[in-house]
Image (tube, rainbow, N blue to C red; front, side, top):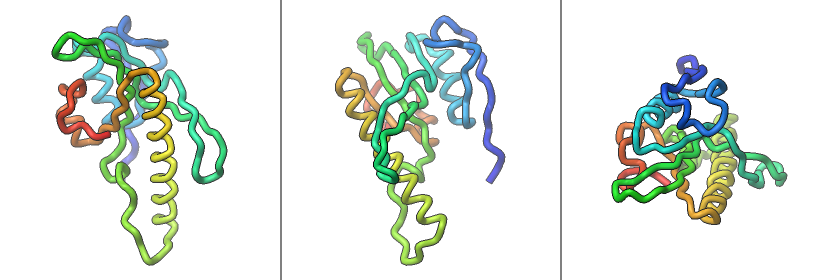
Amino acid sequence: MGKPHKGFFKPRNAKKYKGDPTKIIYRSSWECRFMMYLDANPNILQWASEEFSIPYMSPIDGKIHRYFPDFWVKIKDTEGNIKTLVVEIKPKVQMQPPTPSKKRTKRYISEVAAWGINSAKWKAASQYCLDRKWDFKVLNEHDLGIVNDISGNSQVSR
């Protein structure tokens, strides 16, 4: 596995960013790619990265934790409607439960724990967004190839 691609993003359209545009951090090349899309697309009215949190209960320790979704996006869709989205970017492999294994290896236990935590975060985010009439989407590396259609229902995962 290669070194993670991390850094600071400098938007060309800083006025579109909801938050401090000098402190935008990406934690993967996929997040950086998505930020470039958000910054350049004229239908993106406003966006933010990890600027708010959603409380969720961890299935690991039963305690309330804070989930900082990757992105908050205000977009004008193809019909001219304004929509708000909360977007998480994850590898496709992490968007489904791990394959059951007869051997309880450290890796398998770690994958089960990560799946449980992600599921709890996404459930909390879905409810949070539903309460606000927003949409919640989890995008993977394949979805980023069709990122120009996040406002629709095409191949975007939930």
